Image 1 (tube, rainbow, N blue to C red):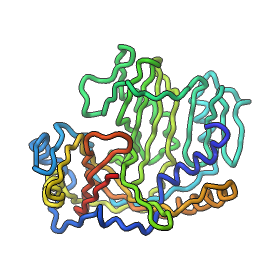
Image 2 (spheres, one colour):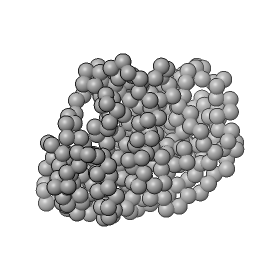
Image 3 (spheres, rainbow, N blue to C red):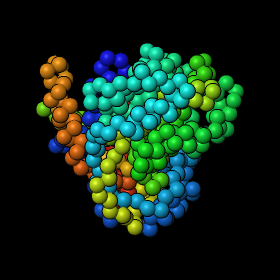
Length: 359
């Protein structure tokens, strides 16, 4: 984030939220007469199924369970925040004794802080915080952990790292930024060479996370409108001293309306639906299954090839972010293997509809 940080932040969120008339029928399957159970029974029978092979797919030995007693159908949008008060307070907290008032300035309708060669910024949507000595490095040889699946805990340089300390630190930092949500770390990548742990965290609403990683499905129509699944996340890194070197937090959702659902499709019924709906001859091995709030986004085409189009694109992004988006709880069966964006087979936990979220 150097000279063009304003464009990066505003466009990033448009890529997380979008909308079009994309036809998804080839990836979408309807299901009739799915069995519904009280929400509190969502995981009944789950343990007996873990590790089992069902001909067209195999379930993992463990899954990431969430402890919840309510689910909703949610209508959300995102509003740009012109109040920089909380962001300025967050900058001061993040830099602590090293905070320099003269390094703080306003620019492009937002607030920025220059820390060495790094620029931290908040322009009313995402917020990015960098320590003065942070330098991005690809962790190609480090150890990766998935919370809830990996045994033995996380270590850095032989020292045990308490995940709850990271969660509490993030929630303390971002309490004013995410008033309706809780942050929970999900995945860690340990780089002993540089003495750093990179993490990805979810935003949870009453313990149920929103999809927190980009997934593989992406389609464009003839007019370059894009269709894909949204994701909302907090990413960053901590050093061997336990301090955060970097935090990037996606803009918070504004919940416009919510409808509580007292019944949902339980895990075992979602498995039965896959037995019926997956194509004969196909075979998937799943590495994890998570219940997450998901939204299939449809983003209007953006032309960023010329500088004259930037202002128009940013205006379009702001207008679109105000448009309500529908999120529903889905059983997300993560397909094992592959690199880059995750691949899922998703079962809507309210309707039983199946979506093949692959490239």
